[in-house]
Amino acid sequence: MATITRQATGSLEATQAVTGHKDQKLVQHYAALDMSLNKNALEKVSEFLALPN
Image (cartoon, rainbow, N blue to C red; front, side, top):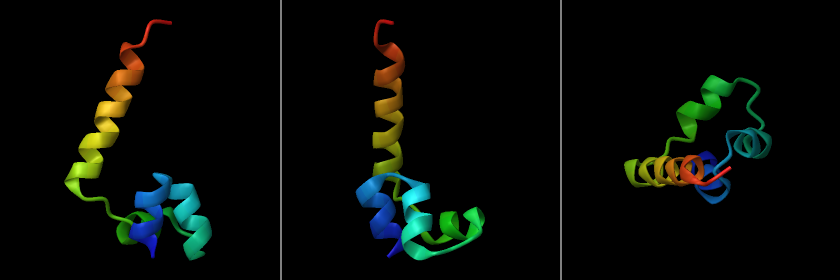
């Protein structure tokens, strides 16, 4: 459930709320993202930083 929630929302906070884990490290452990999602997130950040201010 943690991985599905993180994939759907992209949010560790939302994942923590859904799973009820109190420790962020536990949430990160159970909500692992595959490398393609990590790459996608990095591309979005790069695009955001490249936008004119």
